[in-house]
Length: 210
Picture 1 (spheres, helix red, strand yellow):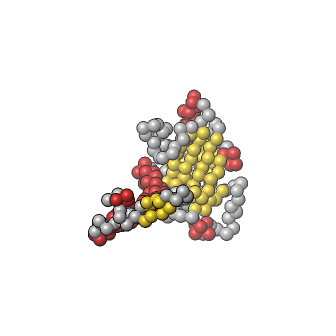
Picture 2 (picture 1 turned 60 degrees about the horizontal axis):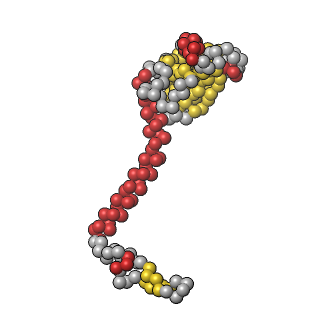
Picture 3 (picture 1 turned 90 degrees about the horizontal axis):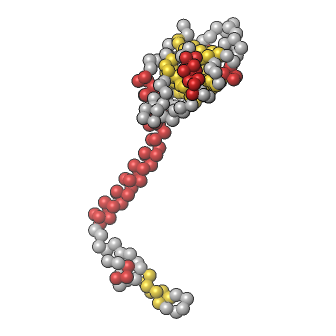
C-alpha cells in the first residue's frame, strides 16, 4: 500500500486554500512477529557495529605485538626487513627509515639497550605490550650512542641506595609493565646511504642486565 492509497491519510490546506493529502504510513499489514524480527535485526546490527569500532584499536595492537613475538626472541635486537608494497613486517612502516625491534621481558632482569647514532637521525621508542608509548629519545639528545637501562619500578627500587644513577653515567628508564617493545628507527636521507645506515644500526643491542 502506498501513502496515496491510504484512506486514513490526513487532509491539510496549503497557502492557496487547496487541500493537500499528507501520507500516514500504516504497518497494519505487518504481523507482530515480522515487526519483532525487524527490530531485533536492527538492534543486533547496531551492537555489532559499536563492538567492532571499540575493538579495532585493541585488535590492531595485539596483532602487532603478536607479529613481533613471532619474529624475535625476547630481549634480542632484531633488524626488520625493508617494507615493500607487498610485504611489511609491521603496519605503517615508513620506507624512509630502517627499523629494528626488541621484544623485552623484564620478569627476571632489567634490560640494557645500546643503540649507536647513525648518519642522520636515530630514535628509540618504548611501548607496553598493549601499544602504549611511555618513553622516547633520539641521538640528538643522547649523543653518539644511546645507552640506557630499562627496568620496572620494583627493580629500580631494589637498586643499592649508595649507587649513584645520573643521566650522564647511566640513564634508567622505568617501564610500567614487565613486557613490551623497544622500537629503533634510523632515517635514511639518500638511497645510496641505506646499506651504510643498516650496518650502523646492526650494532644496536638489548640484553638482560645481570
